[in-house]
Image (cartoon, rainbow over all chains, first blue to last red; front, side):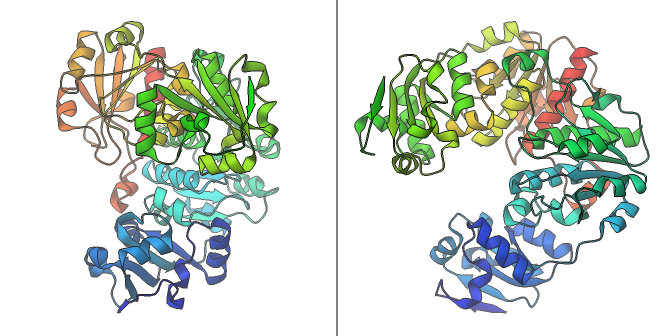
Length: 270
Length: 270
């Protein structure tokens, strides 16, 4: 159903309010149980993954690109000016969709079906979470577990950076950070703590295991000492000696995650 | 030399004008031969790498954090309001430095001293270029060659994301895209073209070589067909079958670069 709206303050557009205000968006999305998908490709993937559409916001120019998948969804069509006014930025390929969230699986349910897990502790940056999901999905990780304080993979920026990988890889959220790793061990996962510390086992030398969970810590601080101590094995990505000498002594978490996921897949194959 | 400025339009602040206007900044920085370093750590690394300071812009609060390395540089001290007004964003740890660019080495000079090269073709995103330099430096790449249209590693955002790695890893810019790879081959480099195409040689199976240059293509489009055809060998990072089926069929260029640099280092060690 198409509705042509000419007022940026129309209450029907309230799902799309103040997209650059992270704190406000977090509370709107939690209260209403929604998330936003941006751009044709990501919207298609969200629909394909089974998330119900609340509404779509687009312009005349971009409407045709999505028509075949929208069914009887409510589609608000606005001018370019209203679109960029609402968003506060250039909307990727001129379309936003407000989608209903679905219940997340329980951690135990997720663990039953997985053999290669990523566990993210307190990553706060939505772009990083999205980029890590994209790498994880491409490289064959089959589940992600989030610490209680880890950023939301369905936040718009995370969804966008992930290219929709947050829809294709199952994830669950721990309700207990302190006991979280014990649950993983109980389910038969070897827990590997990734650290910049160059004195621990290099990732390439980790013996193969049937079920592996790789723990990644927050930007800057890395893994908590509690999780480092609880993990079965601390592992590192070897750095060049020259880099260590000049102080460029760490990878960002997205780069480290990509190398680690690639390593996990080789472990699984071997 | 400290100067306390109270006018955001003071002409002495013109190096710092309109930091969010990428096109304007490109022309200012090219004309004046400057670049901007942001935050204490990055400014220290720029100074340590030998770039002359034109001036530093900071606030009273952050001045002390840099005093020991500023020597007799001109330091403009402004209020928090002027600082954020000039920048248009929250300046990382309240300090910006305008530094003089140094001449880049010629490609041939760079090639003489290197054995593990990255070659970036037309990457346009400054954050991606910065992140790739950071991974390259940490993982032992000893030189980067940029295609003529590749984004500037000394643009503020690239410098920041690289954490200063753009100062520690030598790089050069090709003046001829079409003949660029021939120069690499003449210098004895095996050229590897990274592609998402899963039918080519997996990165892990590349035979060791004394001198290797890994070619990375632009976000989205990947390597040009000319470079793909010119390269000695096309290589891929193996993707999971499940990912290929759901359409999450590629890594972003930063993730791919990290995995590839890690692979190159192992090739060198082996």
